[in-house]
Length: 260
Image (cartoon, rainbow, N blue to C red):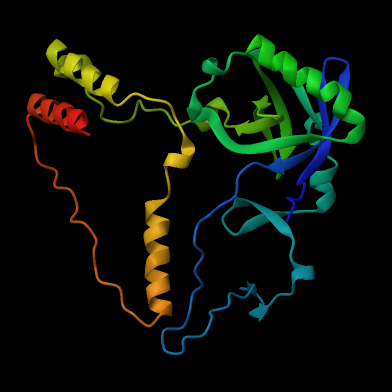
């Protein structure tokens, strides 16, 4: 089934306006479970319940509210969201171009793919080719799900991808962590050994080489239970936090990598 566009608007690029549709670039493969009553087992259903009137509330009587003090709320109307004077509600307005390496991966949040409307195809692909030629990505803003996101627009195969990004004040600082002064804890020989191990394990990235082992094993357990078989416990023992000699561990790792 073809994906459904979650947002329609335009990409603003100088005086150029490109009508586009926005699609999620990823899909969750997590295995979903339902809550059951252990004695039946029947499905547990959650009800929307008013704590004041002590009654179940129908969907058409539910509104959104912002809590500004304990048990005190300001009620929000749909127009309070739709009438906000924010240009990024309808336009992904590009404001700057940078090299992708200038963006720390910590800032990336969620991926999307842009599809040009038929009338927007002509200006869409020159933008894509220009990004490829200059090896740049575009920085812009877009409003999705009651938030204005910083975003990165970049070529992606025959398409153009957009990744929403966190703002600087949303990235937690590491200053509060108890981190040692790293340079005082290592020797040049240890760094050289670690570099050798890194060199031996260096290669190209092919995402098809990896799979979710947890999901695969969980599906195996579910299939066994559907067949009336209780799967044998095969969970590995948790790693012990013992202190090891770093040089010996690095040497052993290098030798093991050579044999592989």
